[in-house]
Length: 616
Image (cartoon, rainbow, N blue to C red):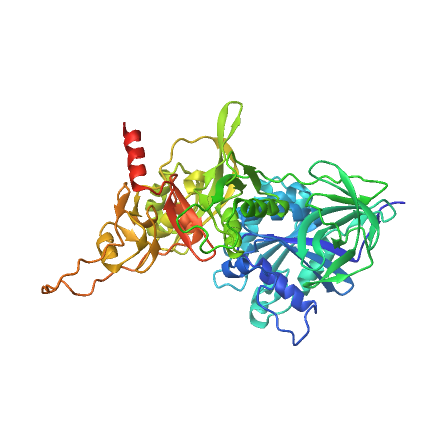
């Protein structure tokens, strides 16, 4: 039987740079398609269901939903915009036939736009360009359209891919249109998303397949339900799947296959999964009842176990060592503190996080975790500490590989928007980190856009320096562009730290004397231990300070000596800032309640001996 076109179905992914409005657009599509009741209370950015996503305002995990537009069923995948979560984007693109490329009407194409579009074009997907936020006062949709066309050509799009339709939209206001001459009318009177839905119907190819052939379904995502266990999410590429059928699962890891029964079958309806008896070619469904299934596995009939090819995930660029907490405060705040707990949690993460890698070390208490960037790993660290884990992590380091005897390191494309007065200091700071200026656009509204190629290790610890240099007014975005020969040594932290001399609680008198040496990270009444980092020293040396020292008590009183001591407010750092701050001989101690910086070697005497040996 010949392949059939499933005309009533469209599968699309929404791809874009961070903060260009993907999740907001999905919200409006759900509302205008009648997914919610008129009186239903729905949160903003409803697809960002993860706590961390809501706090940070970014999408971390790819998620599925579906809307009904007239007689058309549209399966939608909301994807992350940050390149660190590119593994999420790469695998979900296997489930769709086309993409909505969302671009801000002022910012234009950004590094992550380039990243996700390159993936979509390489997979031969059809694109609809949505120029969003046209209601911004500084919007420049016509110029942005030209920049997008240039980007398509630069990425080697085919003639068919270059002939992309363009929809102009304001996802916040909930309207879209296809003719730029209508902009003023829509700004005045609004509208709806009918033109966008119609563009999806007209331009995104419908699924094509043969329902009579043996089943093939590729698992592209995993979910979990406390009642029915692990849930595999994927697209039916061939044949049909039925609830209760016996199926073979071909492992992506080693090609072996096992048998299982499809206990439950669901498809997406709005924000919910609804149970269905069967699904055929082109449908994106959820399968429950297979406890050991993993991303990349193929579900087939027992008599025809044929695996589908999975995508090549870009390799990790950053590595960190996760180890059991061995500080004097170990075990005080965490529920899961042993090496067994840490190992099991990291291996569980590897099952769903396909762009992450895990290596065991010679010691059972330490594990090397490799990811796509600092944010990728810091999200894992933050998630684990919220789940009750206590551990410590090392400074992020880049992964260097050898090609034909030449050491190759990851290089990133860095795009910064800088106020004109700060261009010089930014270029000087990046120059010392081996950055090469690739492009410089003329000033626009007081900002200059600079493009650099820079080694990934040169960016470690730079974000806070960049914000200081631009007085908080600069914007930077990065994406890994590939591997290039080693660029030489880079000094990333020109200053030292203040280290606690003894165990105890910090005292105002001791802190007052210590703050003359540098910027403190803690206030009074904080428990500390020997070797814990309590501040930053402006000079390139580590200074041991006694912040637990109390004032000597006498019965003598002198004029002015007993005035209240004034402390400078401490510099409080987030997890990402702590990771950027680290030096090679330091660790971050992570617990559910506290994040501390510490020296690897806690003993002041042992560190002094080690320094003297190095000097000789």
